Image (cartoon, rainbow, N blue to C red; front, side):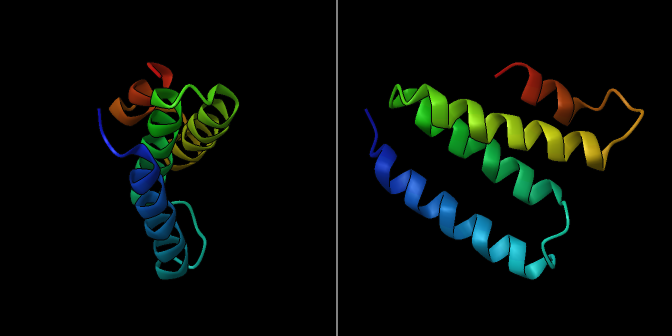
Length: 79
């Protein structure tokens, strides 16, 4: 068992830094961190938050890769 609360803390820090770095525009790094955050909440059985972050990651990936069936979209769909 891991320290999921610490993981959540660091993913939130990463997301904030990425949003600043990429001027709050969609980016694969942000989507990846959102996805990881959803997974951490899933492991904590906080399913509403898990769904929220997985959905946000999917929406961002669909924006990044429109009209494509990109592997990153598949990752989001599998969560």
